[in-house]
Image (tube, rainbow, N blue to C red):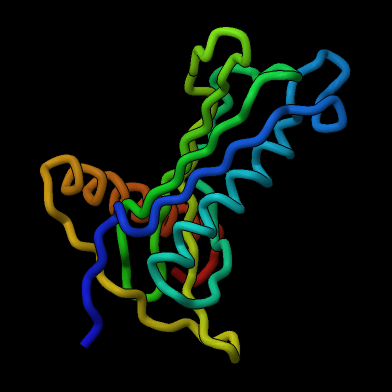
Length: 161
């Protein structure tokens, strides 16, 4: 029997300084760099929850709310929000932090779906998520809504859900 896991046991945080080679000519971090860091930080939370290999299956709701300038820190925080049968959803929040003031600002948020796979590339069952609070329940409900929308769009494109 697989034991349910708490989201707190699989969180991940990434912090790094935004350097000129990560930026556009305006002095802000490239969106592709942010997306790369989101995928990595999300994957770490996924791996901690599943203890398996995993593939990124989709990204929902990626928003770029505020730019992050060269010299600031970029902080990414990830947590498992919902578990399905062989996949799970991870929320990644991105913040900027000004070096001189320590002021933090939410700059991006994304929801990633990962599929757990075995060493032969076959999808495998994911450990359940322990849902303990009303906030946890709300996140699970919202994740199911995003999943239903994603599967509906896939079906409309002619894909197999």
